[in-house]
Amino acid sequence: MKKASVVLSAAAMTVCAILLAGLCIAAPTLVELYSRFRGLDASSGTAILTAFYICALPAAVSIFCLLKIINNVYKDQPFLRSNSAMMGIVSWCCLGVAAVCAAAGVWYMPLWFITLTMTVLFLIVRVIRCCFIAAAGLEEENSLTI
Image 1 (cartoon, rainbow, N blue to C red):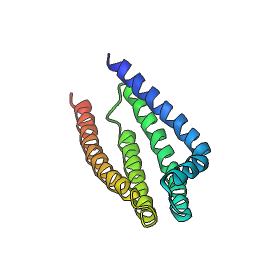
Image 2: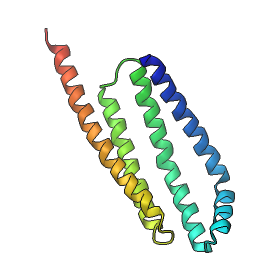
Image 3: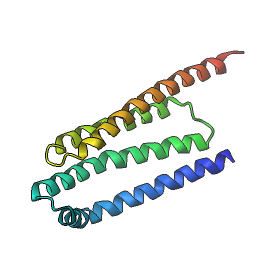
Image 4: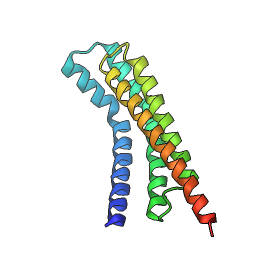
């Protein structure tokens, strides 16, 4: 059952990567349609599109890191130092997205909600990372105990 959950998580992340690639291709058309539907001015549409493309890179990096973590979990190695490092990268990606959305929120205010969400996610991932670092230390200590 545990392995099935890990495989399902990896499949979900792969689907997210494919969706991100598709959104990168379709973003200009989608933003134009959204801008027309909402009656947004050109600067708001440009802010949304620019923020999306800048945030796509940290999103892709995060997906890659999460896939590496889930691969290690599949191999029954969840508490590796490399997993903690990957979690650190994911957390900084969250903060980067928050910063981009905060800046773009000047032109399109709803992006500030994403800023708040990503800032909270940054903090959550940092706390979980600290727990993983402590667990990795305990695991190393226990493996040295005779």
